[in-house]
Length: 143
Image 1 (cartoon, rainbow, N blue to C red):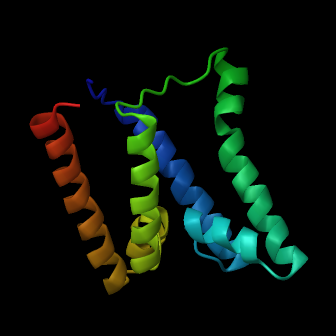
Image 2 (tube, helix red, strand yellow):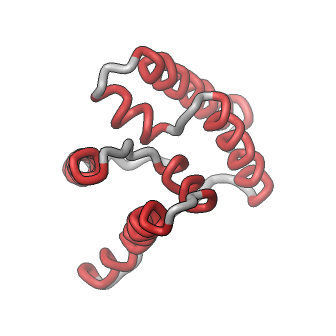
């Protein structure tokens, strides 16, 4: 599988994520961590806390639909693994999010912006683990 580098799309996506994180912090005083938002939606007590989480989650999910309406086609997604690999990966990510006290968006976008030492360690761990995983999958296993 070839990785396609798209600097302008990546820059635009990163800017939109940064803008969304900033607006959430300014408007609600909350950190933009996707797993924290989802888990808070499931366990939120107050209706007003649940509503902003639901709107944000629906906004994340509806992105490809908006792109389809604007461009006429859905974004192409290729997953170089089986359903079992995806399930195992999902469980490992869930464990990592729990032990790491947050996900890549919470630590990488918001934590680094706030200069959190815990987030610096978490992001360094994410990046090292990602590099090792890609190397093993592509060059050792050959997926």
